Structures are given as structure tokens and as C-alpha cells.
Image 1 (tube, protein in one colour):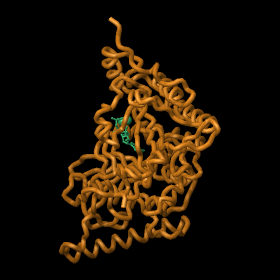
Image 2: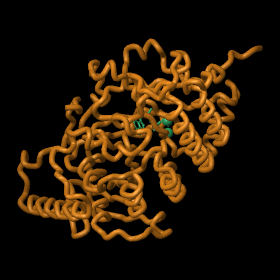
Image 3: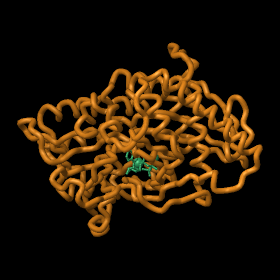
Image 4: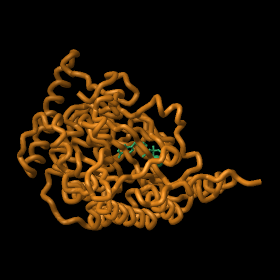
Amino acid sequence: KVLVGNLIGEGHVNYVLMYNMLTGIRTAVSRCQAKIRRPLTDDDYTAAHKYSFDIVGNELTPSARYDFKFKDYAPWVFRVLREDHFNLDPADYLLSLTAKYILSELGSPGKSGSFFYFSRDYRFIIKTIHSNEHKYLLSILKDYHAHVRDNPHTLISRFYGLHRVKLPHGRKIHFVIMNNLFPPHRDIHETYDLKGSTVGREYPEEKARENPKAVLKDLNWINRGRTLELGPEKRALFAEQLRRDTEFLKKMNVMDYSLLIGIHNVQRGNRDNIRRNTLRVFQPVDFSERPMPMRRKMSLLKSQQAEAKALRRAMRQSDPRELTDRESDPAAALADRQHLVFYQDEGGMRATDEANEPMHQIYYLGIIDILTPYNTFKKAEHIWKGMSADRHKISPVPPTEYGNRFMAFLGAVMRGGGGAEKFKPQSRAE
Ligand code: ATP
Ligand code: CA
Ligand code: CA
């Protein structure tokens, strides 16, 4: 079993949040999914549906264990994105995320304070985001939709949903659901997060040797002499998609995004057993273990029946496929990627030589963290960091410069691209 780690129950600080997120997703998504498809209107991009959950429940929301409010943003748009552009089976999506209330937590790997959760089959990531990022995603949703429609092979994160949980004391937590770039069934031997910025972009090499799960950065890539091994065919496709995606991000006025690359070496295989998610796993509490008042039991039962009905209704609109045990079948989990050029080899992209013949690496890659507009905060950071280091090599630079540097860097790291040495920071002359 892939998910190992400490089982964490009710007492965990984020257990309630996780429960509320999944209950909200399950209710809201199956409700939207149960309706007959209709063409999108402009209003759909700004629509938001509100749900209020409590332990009693009503005809709109099943009873829940906690009181909370849930907001589903642009439900029709995300439905179209999932079904038409991201090739997701609606029942699959809901079942992967919410059939059992288990998520594993990656904690907060970045500096931003966002939390990351994997669905139990490892296909989906829930990322909590800042309210600015949420506002920003809504503001570009129409452009984002147009971009993924025109670019089915985009490298940019696939967003499947945008939601908000509001806790009784008023705290609001926004989150997105997106694709996990990394596969459930393959060890990732090296991970890089590349921005094209080199100032401070190094994970300490001594620490990296002890930690196979370390996320390495631009300077590690250069110092280790890595190249992206792609033959002429894939190189051309990849460069063109990268160009289109970066042009889009420049136009959207964002920066700080990166190309995440996980490298699996097929000769090494899975023998090192680097479980990427040997993390904390949330385990739901079994209701049957504790005495429960009759009234509570009845309402729980009713809600479970209502949920089952909604789920069945949602499923009737898609292929009536066998649903049991699908989570443990990696082939099924990768089905939505099979037609995508950069994700079709075991869920990733096989390295190729100059004759376009396969090599030993499989790359799992994509552009992530695309929700940071170049706002006043970043402008200040740009000026501040620019005083102590080369103004063009630090990470916060304006979007056009950021995008051009990103593209140039990735062009240089591809085989035949000339290498990225010139991106290294020069020691300053007096
Ligand atoms: P910061 O703003 O400080 O960079 P963040 O909280 O916005 O951090 P991200 O940059 O989005 O976080 O991601 C942090 C790490 O989480 C990545 O380096 C990667 O290891 C992992 N990660 C993020 N998105 C994905 C994804 N779609 N698939 C697989 N791993 C991911
Ligand atoms: Ca980042
Ligand atoms: Ca970020």
C-alpha cells in the first residue's frame, strides 16, 4: 500500500478542516454534476454557490459532523474544465477524493504557508491558497479556460475546483484541487523546482544526499550538470508548448511560477522504495465505535442515503464502470493522461536520444504555483532584494522579464541548448 505513516484521527489540528473540505466537495460537486449539461454563460465565471452544513442537515445539505459553511466557486466552469478539457470521469473524481475520508498531508512545503493534501489514491492535490490567490484565479478564470481549450497539452497546473470553507469562528480557508504531477506507482529519484532564477536557489548539497525527497533548485541543476534529455521530436513539442504557456502567464501578469520536474530512472526502478508520501494520513473516525443518540443516528443515515443517491445520479451520466478497487489500479488512475503528449509514458514523458529512441529517465513535469500576480508586495521585494544581489537574477522580477528568463533558462537546460552556466550569479566585482 502506498500510503503509510502515522494515522491521525479526530485530534489532529487539521482533521476538522479536512472533513469539512471533503464533505463540501462531495455535496457541491455531486449537486452540480447531477444537473443536465447546458452551455456556459458569462455569469458562470463569477457564480458562487453557498452551502451551510450542520449536524441536522436539510434537503440541500446532508447532516455533517461539524458546523461550517462551504462556497463552491464557478461550479459550471470547473465542471466543463474537468469533463471537456481534463478528461476526468465525474464519478472517478468524486470517489478518488471523497469515497473515504482519508488524505495524506504534505504539510506546508513552501514558504507561503499553504498546506498540501493528497487524495488517498495520490491523483489529486488539495492546496490551501491565500485569499489573494483565490481572487486572482477567479479574475483569470475565463482566460485560463480559453488557454486550456486552445492548448490541450498545456504544461500548466490543471485546476479542477476552487472552494472555500468557513469555520464557525469566521476563519475562511480557500483551496484549489489540482493534478498531482507525480505518479502513485513510481519512485521519484530526483526532484527539481526550476524558476530560471539563481540567487539563493540552491538546496544544500550535503543535506540533499541524506534526503532523496528534497526539492532541488536551479543551482543544484546547474552544478550537477543535468540536462533535459529530449530528442528532436519531443524537444520541439516541449519548447513550443513551453513558449505558449509562458506567453499566457506573461499576459496574465504573474510571476514566481516554476517548472517542477520529478525524475524516475527506470533502471533503478522502485527498489529504493522512496515513498514520496510517507506522511501523516488522516483516518476518519468510525462512527460505530461510539455510542450515538438515536436522533443523530437517524440523521446520519438519512444523509448517507442522500449522498449515495446524489452520487449514483452523478454516475449515471457517465460510464457505468466498475467502481470497486479502481484506486489500486495505476492504469486507471493514469487514464486521463494517456492522450497527452507530455504525460503519456507511464503518466510522464520518457527521455529520448537524438534518434528519438527512449532513454532511462521518465520526467514528471509541469508548471506550478501560477497564482502570484506581480502586485505591490512583489514589487517591494524586487527593489529590496535587488539592492543586495543582481537585479536580474533574483526571483521577483516583473512578469515579462520573469517569463523571458524562465523560457531562456529552460531552453538552455535542454540537450543542445548550451547549458545554463550563464544564469549563475557572478561574484560581484568591487
Ligand atoms: P512558495 O510560494 O514558497 O514557492 P507554495 O506554498 O506556493 O510555495 P508550491 O510552489 O505551489 O508551494 O509547491 C511547493 C512544493 O509542493 C513543490 O516544490 C512540489 O514539491 C510540491 N507540489 C506543488 N504542486 C505540485 C503538483 N501539482 N504535483 C506534485 N507536487 C507538487
Ligand atoms: Ca513555488
Ligand atoms: Ca506560491
